[in-house]
Length: 159
Image (cartoon, rainbow, N blue to C red; front, side, top):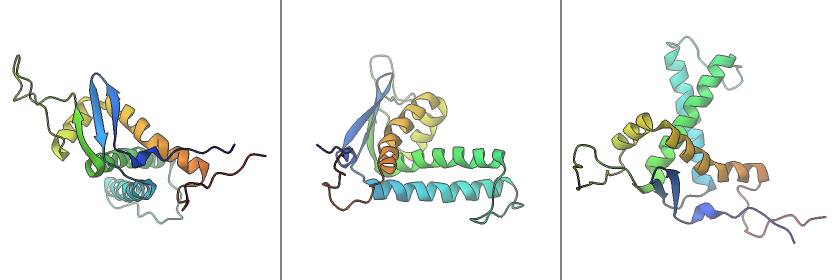
């Protein structure tokens, strides 16, 4: 019997991060993921160019130094997770509004660009967990080589 990866990203899902925190994502597919990934790389490249004060104008065929390449990869990964959260996350649980919460009266924190940025800076380990769990399915689909397959019955028979 042939097997393939399930396209589980089509269902809304909550991703547990630990410490009672989970982020719920609306449905988004491989095409939306790849569009976010392309946008992240474009913004990261612009950021690297800006950081180098315009001295580095990168063409698609130019080779980066190892340090610049590492900066570009790291910045792209950060922008990708921010983009996916802000575009596709429908909410989160386990995050409190520190200003509004008091002893016995816990106020949930809404998921906004500002609260996400604060969360990212205060809880980088949980953001790393989210990145691994959110991006893993799409990386596996890339490895399978069938991200844009038109039919769910595209598995290659064994043998």
